[in-house]
Image (cartoon, rainbow, N blue to C red; front, side):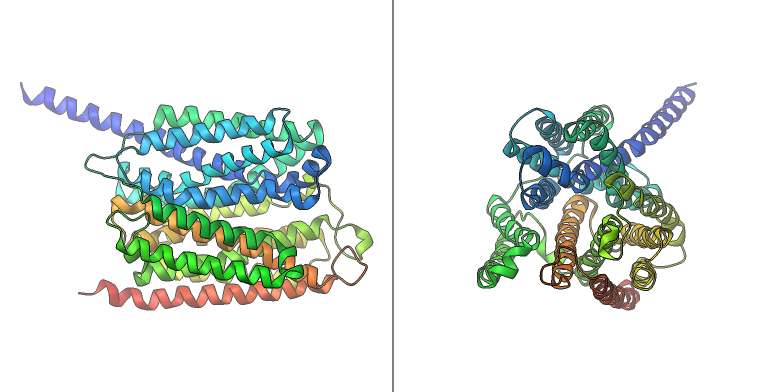
Length: 477
């Protein structure tokens, strides 16, 4: 008689746990998608912002750059907070900041307030690693691996989701209407997190290394500022080089601080593990290539016919070119967990890097027809999706559960820096290919940039293959 109720309670508890898991997974996906899409809203709205606020295109560009800056700075801090007992509170507080920032972008305030709002929205980029930590702590091992892979993919393809919607709203109702989309979805994300985010497991501690956070923030600000200010390199090379040296020195100082700290912001010793270091190097180089091709295709599609090439697409129609990127990226993310049972994660990284390189080759060889741009963007999306889905597996295979958020947050900082450099390198190559007195670069400049991208993906491929060769020896006793 006593055994039945106990068994019934156990079955009921198991059913509740499964029900909560079913609700948790879409919540994690939704939050990761929202923060990525909202942070990318600056991309299609740059021209509209410049017109509406009567500022230069360079100033309007900061609506994107400042979000990337704040995201890169906030990510390691949130990763450490997310590793502790107050992860739920950290997630809710961060989303509240993102919602407040979204409100600032909608209200009829001066341009400076718009930048402040965009900076607050960018803070949400640090939540992706926390979503992975939640999945790893509260889902079965097999399920969590697949969910973490999809969270990684969703955080990348979010740009492809937000771009066309924001562009359409900007054409129909102006820039405030487009940013209104961000306010609606971030408020929905906050409500979702409040209803679904569980507390962190007991026994966790999280002491933020304030000194390390400040030094890393300063270094990242310099790195991303230098990546975004292309005119500084062309007009004030000595100043730019000096700032680059300062950034390197700050990063070295930060590494020393972390090694000496008992509660480091990022466990540098773990980052030095060959698998983690190799994965981050591959992410950095691949990030340069991925964002370079994304920038080249979208810019080429919007180039007016008068340049002798391009398609003169409107912002909204150009945003539709990103649909193959998002769709095939998601497909690759769904396929990767199944392929991982047969192929090691480092080999998946290498194969995905080769696919992205194929996208560069396709763009370099054939871009006279719009369908060819769609094809190149689809190949890029499939490669990026596979790469993003395989990356967490390489890092988390040698990372304790308690350090999931911290380890992945560092990887996302590396990715952000790589993306920023990819955008900057593309701009520099196209600027170098612009003849005197011309506003637009020669068509050959796009080919040159594509060849540089192929080189970057070749390096990422070789790095991933090196990881694959090390892996068997590391797993043996």
